[in-house]
Image (cartoon, rainbow, N blue to C red):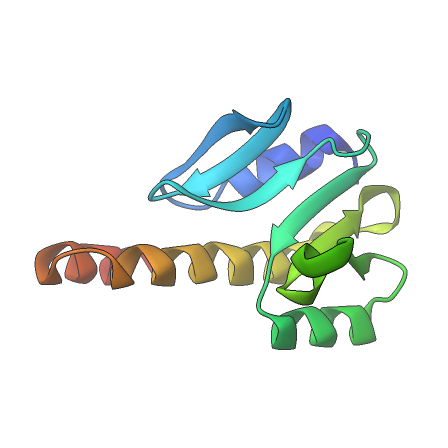
Length: 121
């Protein structure tokens, strides 16, 4: 998978927008970052998983997923080695990260906004 293919996949999820974070593109839903690309280079992406999700994806596809450095990785930030990834492998991880971000948005919103976010899922 290339960086452009990763971008296209991530942007295919509803209400996702691309912004920039620390000089590289990030992808957000409801203002929450759930994926990035281009750090440290264009062969890497990142998806924000739970530690349990991270462990599962790393177990199933160790050539594709590794924890980010330090506390970020311990908390679920997961590096994606794009040249070794396929859409079939990566899409469930991106979807999990997207849903995780939606859940965080829902916790900080009013009941009406939570219902609207639930309809997106």
